[in-house]
Image 1 (tube, chains in turn brown, red):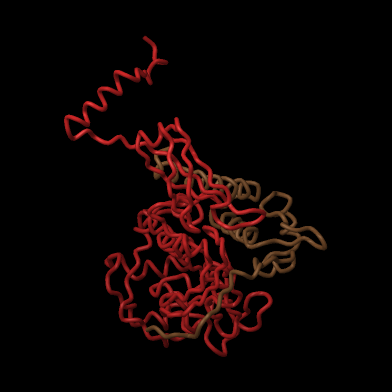
Image 2 (image 1 turned 180 degrees about the vertical axis):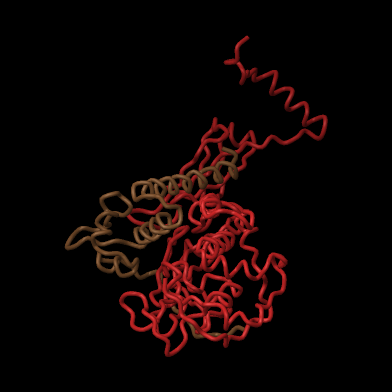
Length: 104
Length: 339
């Protein structure tokens, strides 16, 4: 059964940043745990004055770290490493696709 | 563990398929709890959507999680085993008539962390056998922060695909999203939603947007989840994108490379005249500054990668041109090889 529940408007021109408290609300994490996340380089603020703020990339990192911790039973340090390696893999894949397409 | 007894009152979906949890985890029906845990760990690593490149990783992972949810718990496993070993994976299934009255159901609080693996992620089979939310009027403690037996809705994730031109210029587009939604009875409906997206010039691959409370509705008055959108830029026949830079293969003739030429080159912002220097070589990267994707602090560049195509001689005269080239321009590209 399908039904149209009304239109959603999504505006990418809006720039979204979150405070530490907002990150905590969205991720269901305490400020203490978020400080651990920062300590271990899982996330870092994109803006420090007047208070630390985080963007969507950082939010996604926090959420991915949580899933990895829960589902794969790894600790925070490992989760941070996994995130960085995933970024590197992504970049390498993009470069590879480019090289293959343009015979480099 | 808290359980809520309730008489069976639900209506089963007619297309409920049996799930053979032992097959899903690849273990024997007599497997020990350790065997089951090992199997889960191995499969979780293989299919976890954040790290897996397997096809259908997300769906496979959900199956694995659901199987583990049942088989790791002695009470659920016993109840499941009572269905018997004659059912086959995917078979049309009806629970036995006394399922409701003799079997204890488990309220949704027993399912563990809700944010990703709540009732909405489980199959009809699971929902109908192991719970569909606490009975109205029953005593139940909800998640911290919510009253009663409310349950937060799931987050939804959607990918929207746009062309490279749309990413370059910016666009305002409407999409239709199929979003699975869990109703108050724990059953999944396919919901069709219209999404109007404003994308500024210079959108990047993977760029995310969070739409608060636009995900799945919560159950029993719980808050809705969020909707996360991700931009996917479709492959382009000519251009490749790396960060803000755009790449293009520029095929030229040997005489254009040797003698130089003025060539009109396409860019996302329109054609641009490029001056090819004499003595150009294959694989050289010619930079068109600022002709990549818009961005801060400055736009990306476009790189034209030279490819020299050698025309095949079709006539005697054409062959003679090549032969005279060989005579007049002795040239050994392999001179650096060992003798």
